[in-house]
Image (tube, protein in one colour):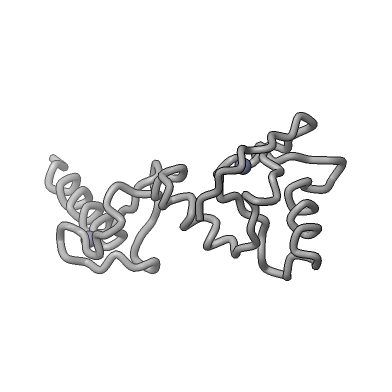
Amino acid sequence: MRSDTPCKIWTGALDSHGYAMQGHTRVAREVLEKKQGYPIKEGLECCHHCDTPACIEAEHLFAGTHGQNIRDAVAKGRMKSNWPHPEKTHCLRGHALVSANIYIHLGKRHCRECRKIRDRELRERRRHAQP
Ligand SMILES: [Zn+2]
Ligand SMILES: [Zn+2]
């Protein structure tokens, strides 16, 4: 959904994520609740169509889940996926890249099985290197 209404940028305090704050309340959340006439449901967040956390224009706000918020952000390119090839399901050696088999290092996914293999090779090499 696109809106022609310009952003209404909050000039007061912002929190560490750039959201408009009044005391301990997120202003956008209040604005949205006033607009829809009832509180944002449990589990939902106040999201921005315009991608501007400091914006408090009611037209730009919608209640969505955190997941939606992230997908929305990824779709708009605000947030890059955590790893270079999210579509990859298997490593070079063919091990499945499932959560049980991956670890994150420097923002990239790595295969635990492959690490085990590398560790073993390294140990072997060290042993053979012994005089
Ligand atoms: Zn806006
Ligand atoms: Zn592997």
